[in-house]
Image (cartoon, rainbow, N blue to C red; front, side, top):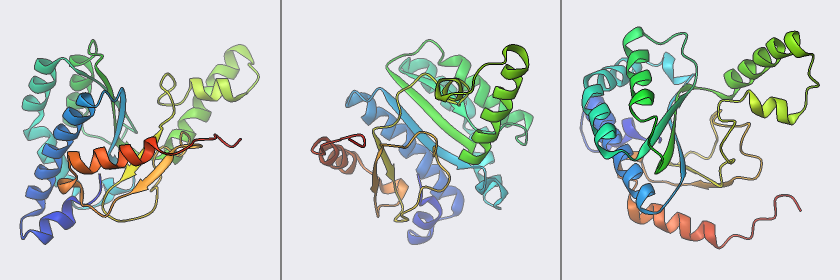
Length: 217
């Protein structure tokens, strides 16, 4: 979901207005994904690198000021089951409480499984996987194989992504879900996130559906 700050600058608006527009588009893309019967959706809301930027205070402020509205909307809609993935040690208590409440409020929903990567980095997930395996090994001396590794990943129970879309024009993965993307189709859009629309999403999905996927065979 790249391009909120550049969108604000392009439209002569404040950084906060850019992130607010990006937040509103998150809700819109979730709505469209449900309409298109997408079962699993993972959004990269905040990287573990970007948490060091000055803009992080704006992001946290928007999250906390809109938390009640967000929780009420997800609770009312009864559609998206939210799972937060990422590091939590360096987040404030207020932010953690908001993220936890989003998970609790939506636990029984099942129309779409919505993973939100918040303060996420693949390198941190890899460290977490190894630490959990070491704990398991102390107890059971299990043989380390992919099944065991998968068990300790942040998203052990969902299929690996079919399609990854990055908005904003940059053609890189930026430490996002690298443990899951072996055969994922990649699409890089020039559109800044607040302008990413239903029409463009449908167009990308239509292109994806024409690809003959061979999974390395």
